[in-house]
Image (cartoon, rainbow, N blue to C red; front, top):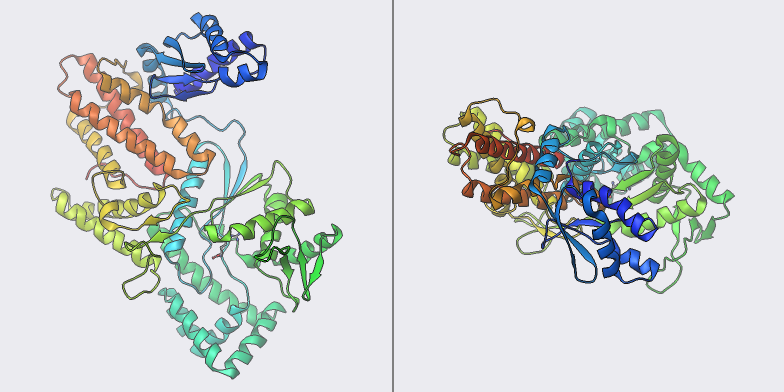
Length: 576
Ligand code: ARG
């Protein structure tokens, strides 16, 4: 209940079965020409070698009284069935949505344990604008998956291992531990890394020390490990400060850096060897997964142990799959990582499949995303051509949000202005990112994302606050689940149907792990609400039952906007 497409689909399924003798998905979808359409006759007819219009006609005839909520069912085109719902059916579905804590969104039929791998910055390196995407897309997916009942395990696969740590540790010693900790805690990660790098390139003695330090690190020398841990901790503290500013769910409990897979690396090699997959290439241990070639068309190896015996990024990702499948017990693993790593993951997962430690139902999905561009449509940079620090971007978003609220909402107290401004600034930045198809690049544009017009967070936040103000004026406790909804005006009907689409919107977003589908839905909802509000007086409605019915529509709209934005990690003020 509370999703009419689903309700009608479950009513139609037995009818299709009775008519065709086979199991058919009724394929009930939203439609421009009617309230919905059922397209199941086409695949069924194909399967049976029959005429789809005839099958559709038999379904309509047999449906008769079964489809209590459907006022008309008409056959169109090659065999679609256009459905128009009657108002009482819509009203009944609405009141069950209003009474449902999930606002009509159904629970997953098969809840899974899902690992979401996201954010994953590198120790002693700054978080830049690219980390914005993985961090907020991952965060939105975590919230949506949990909402529909999956068990979600967040994993922040930070880069906390590798040869650069030799020079980073030596630089830390040169600076003095206390001084180094200070530099890192204020977030000058890039500065620290650059200084280490510059010394490494210019100073042979430093280079030599750094190399020895890498050997000590890999050999497990306790003092070296202690210094390494200091670097990791200082960076992690900084990352978490950024996460708090941004309002995402990641905490230190979610850290699962590359180094945590060390105990499994020998096991990876052992298993690959036992599976007969290991080969030698230029002194390194490699696996050749079929289907991957280099520019010359030669087979492309996945290097799992370098000539010097060292493991690499691919080795820890191989171990990581073993860990997620066998220890964590995940069946779905999402990797929210930029598009350039697509081939790396394809090769790693292929090797896992070949070696037999990634088998159905367990599966990995690369939730990839495009780049953030500047107004010149090149990679987003500061005016001086540097990469943009994520933390600077967050601070600017908050400043701009607050300035916006100070100029628009003079009646709010200064504290409130700051609080609301923060929600608007951060919300605007997140929404601009989430509302474009993640695969595509997008242009970072402050004015556009902070605008109160168009498909933006401030527009949706404002729509929500406006509804809350209606209730403040009404001055009464109101339970929308109790009101009987009447749908006299076309705008009321359109809004009602939209409200009932929340379930489909969440389902579609999760189908492809594409938060922008939920954004589009929320924007459509806010527009339908505006059209309704312009055409239909609410508090000034003449008849009390109409007033109550309209208040019920307002209330459910506000709750869905609030919940929907919440699923995207965006806060919603009650007034602004
Ligand atoms: N730290 C990596 C980077 O910055 C991203 C890690 C993504 N996750 C993974 N399992 N490889 O490129």
